[in-house]
Image 1: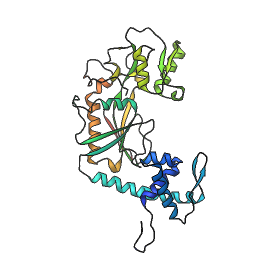
Image 2 (image 1 turned 30 degrees about the vertical axis):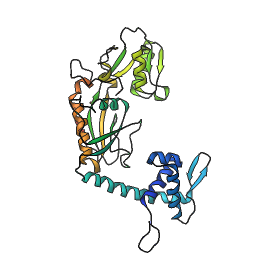
Image 3 (image 1 turned 135 degrees about the vertical axis):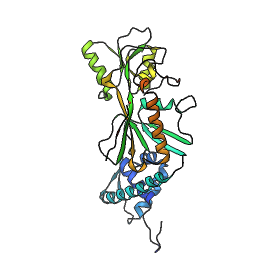
Image 4 (image 1 turned 120 degrees about the vertical axis):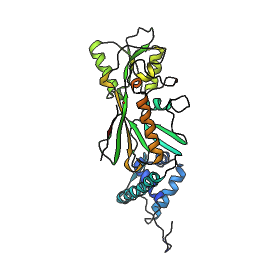
Length: 319
């Protein structure tokens, strides 16, 4: 990009690529994060480096790229440019009244399974028309300030950030096994996930009552499949397991590991029409199925679905 005097000026897209490479440590990883090819990332990074006299801003290491002194000196200014550009983009999105386009939701596996059941006409609370939902299942909440997602549906509200946070409801969970199975062994998370509340609860049962370990698996769908096959017993979300004819519940809902869920959105995007419509839809789902989600009997049934995975209304408006 050239200015009126014919000299080159900084292109935000090139600065964005510079920051992505600095954060991810390689052209390939930066390309995955931005949805661009590795050659495109390399070409745009070279263009950015040329603006600063041609010296490279990264040292090429066997395990990837590492910022050198010249690159490190630019990080602060590039991040200021990023904050300004993203703020403008969020405000542009918030000003739009159009109910169309894509809304990207950062979400965990239990909640992803719940929302996915309501994307067809079978649901009494269908998704808002004209909007394409993009559910991004991950262990970590996306960086909402950088628009890695438009909003998040998560277990725990963040402690900081310019965010609007609202609690939408609770998922109850209980111990289940295959109907008629007699195995007392447990199905739970892997050692790397031993800090999860459900994994800690199962570990406590093992210490207090003994029993063996049938399987450790890193996600709920794998655990669900193993329990359903009769491999052992384990903790599952009531909303899915209660309606599965192959499963029987062995305990009432366990309040100590009930999973609270919160919607989190950047304040600038809170009133964007598309984002607001999705937030309202999520709240309506949790309200409509509140007792079913809590694992209480005789309540509204969810739309039927193959088993997949997973709280009273209150609002916390964070500064």
